[in-house]
Amino acid sequence: NAGVMQNPRHLVRRRGQEARLRCSPMKGHSHVYWYRQLPEEGLKFMVYLQKENIIDESGMPKERFSAEFPKEGPSILRIQQVVRGDSAAYFCASSDRDSPQYFGPGTRLTVL
Amino acid sequence: GENVEQHPSTLSVQEGDSAVIKCTYSDSASNYFPWYKQELGKRPQLIIDIRSNVGEKKDQRIAVTLNKTAKHFSLHITETQPEDSAVYFCAASSLSGNTPLVFGKGTRLSVIA
Image 1 (cartoon, chains in turn orange, yellow):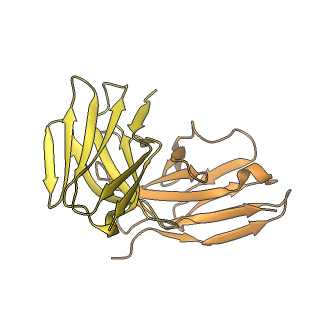
Image 2 (spheres, one colour):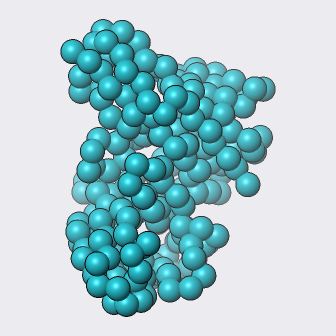
């Protein structure tokens, strides 16, 4: 039973480019959460999605950031026009209804 | 919204000693409290969790206690080993409705051989 998958594991972008991060939840899980972790800090919630629906995006910046979880395929977190402050580790987690959240290995984004 | 405070931020113990990490939460609606262990460059890994209908849960050398009245919960690691060295995060949420986790800032545990 494969765990939560994320790709790419490392992503380097120049300022102004777009970053696209992918997350495939654990088999049988229909809830996906995205968290951001800055160096030496805790995890901060960004967005919570179920298939084809954004449930809670209260932690996601209003501009440049978007997320989706289509009926088919992985969840995608998109960051447009990246800036140096977007450099961080982005983790997704998945769960089933009323089950714990399990994390993927993360995508480490570096903005040059 | 929920706010989770975690102490201490760093903790050093001798191998074989016990380690205790404490967290407080603010939202009385929170009813689910997981603990994650994160090694350098790795994913947060769930090590134990507790729901508000119990006061204590144990899994081998790891135990978690919950005091709903005082809104605090603690992680206890006994007979620590060097491989326990990592950053530990507590979190709180309402499991009903799958609300997002609110994390503490983490405790860096070093077990000295």
